[in-house]
Amino acid sequence: MDESSGVIKDIKKKIKDLRAKGFKLYPSGFKRDITIEEVVRRFGTMDNDELKEVPDTFILAGRIMSIRDFGKAVFIHIKDGTGQLQAYIRKDRVGEENFKIFSFIDIGDHVGLKGQVFRTKTNELTLLASSVVLLTKSQSPLPEKYHGLVDIETRYRQRYLDLIVNDTVRHTFILRSRIIQAIREFFDKQGFIEVETPMMQSIPGGATARPFKTYHQSLGIDLYLRVAPELYLKRLVVGGLERIYELNRNFRNEGISTNHNPEFTMLEFYVAYATYEDLMDLTEKLFLHLLTKLFNKLTVTYQGDRIDFTTPWQRISLIDSLRDIGGIEERALFDSKALRDVAKSKGVELEGNEEDGRVLGKLFDYMVEPKLIQPTFIVDHPIQVSPLSRRKDDNPTIAERFELFVGGKEIANAFSELNDPDDQRERFLKQARLRDSGDDEALFMDEDYIKALEYGMPPTAGEGIGIDRLVMILTDSPSIRDVILFPQMRKK
Image (cartoon, rainbow, N blue to C red; front, top):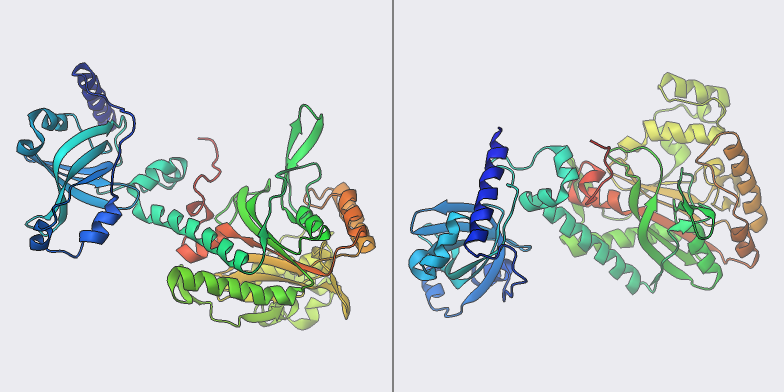
């Protein structure tokens, strides 16, 4: 029998003995009147003489993270959702019957405590308990104190355990929540309204991605988990909602990596009577708001790189980036054969039937994207890879589109929206041909969306920002799984 099995066997015996003695192992509720964070904030700077003048008694609750038993006295550390605090329990203060419970208590159990604060001889802020009650008996041991929970697979599969023992993980997800709150605050102050659009769609649209498919029994129809909310949000712009945003989930039936999870959080927002250039300015303002509010500075460190969000950020066309950053000779960028020769020489996989715009995109992903550490707008993408974007007036082969890169990752995608229903129909038909030829990421034809455009969508710009990748950058997290509470995992 391994060590953990022996520990569990000992816990089970304690549970049996406690029940035999009439202890309630899982009582209903517990009314505390203060959190550990409040205790530290109010008394953390006081010395022991000052604390002796505090007559107040406090009721705390939390999970036991350590136990030091000295026979007639016990030191424990308890942790609640706000912090950790030491408590001192003496038999002569809590009574012999209450003190007996510590023969059956383990690390991981929840307890409620009542007492006053003081400082020990080692100057540690401590609660001197006058009463103690068992609130929840843990039936599985926490990971060993000095090694903690370090196995990546276990951390992701048992996130609840990860949150208990790894404070940095808990802080990451608290910061994630604050980032989202700050995003909402920014858009609300900018006069946007938050909306919700369908998660299940009869036609998946808004992005070139492979969807998840399901079936609705009552309606007798196939439905798809959305790959993007874009086409529904633009229907709302047609309806007169001129400044809107949505923070919600997208689903793409694609690979899993440090930058990809099948279910992810996306911010999308749309502004009527605006262009993609207006959205670059708005994006810079959003990031300045986030950095100032959350960190009170405009720099962060991501995986060893210092990233400076001071505006204005670099703006460079995709073609120029391939030349200036990717090191590709300019003549090759406008010659189909030379372009493919470069791709082959760099080990970039091609299917053989891609249009030049797709080859440029693959070369960019391989030769430029990893080098874009500082915030950079890559503008003016080929129309062939931008089926929902407006064409540039002076060059119809180029879309009014940008992607934002930070830390070598794509963070945002935006464009001036295509609002010509005839042009949009032609592009949908082209996508349909690609789908018929085997491209299961190509867009579906959406007749209702075309109908909406026929009623007239004003000149509009829209943008999507990947929240998970944004949180990765702002929390210095190397994997998207580190910022998603319950990432998708393969079966054991």
